[in-house]
Image: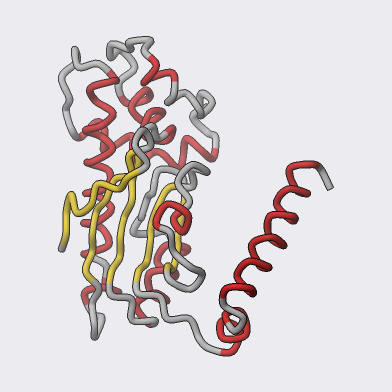
Length: 214
C-alpha cells in the first residue's frame, strides 16, 4: 500500500483500539442490532466536510448521502433510494448541508456568469479546486441543474463572484430542501421528517443551522 493508505489503515486500528478500551461492547452491539439513525445528512462530497467528524458523532448516528455540491435531484435514483430508506428507518430530520468555498458552486457560477467580475482574492483562489468542465463531461452534466439555478437568480452583471458565491450557496441549499419536501417519499410518509438547510463555514469550522426548516 502507499503511505496514504497505510496511514488510513493504521488510523483505523488506533481508532478501533481506543473505542474498545473506552466501550468494550460497542462494536458487538453495533453488529448485532439494526441501525437507528435520527438524521439523514445530504452533503457535499468535499473531503473537508466529513459529517461525523465535524459533528463529533459516533457510528450509527447519521445516515449519509453525499455528492458534488450537495445536490438532490428529483430523478436521481441514488438520492431517492437513500431518502426512502432513511424514511423507512424513521429518521426525524433530513439536513441538507452546503458549505463555503464549494468548488461545485464556484464552477457553476463561472459557467453561468462567464463575464462576471472575478477578483483574484484569496477567497476566489480557494474555490478553484475543480477543473474547467467541458460541455460533455460528467462533471458538467452533473452541475447543469446548479448552473440553471444560478441563471434563475438573475444576479446583477456587475456583481463579483466573491459577492455572488455565498448567495448561490444558500440558494442551492434552499432549492434542495424544497425538492426533498415535495417528494412523494416525504409527502406520503407516515412520520415525515423535518427538513433543514444548513451551511458549514470552512473558515470557522462551524455549522450555520436552520437557514430554512420545514
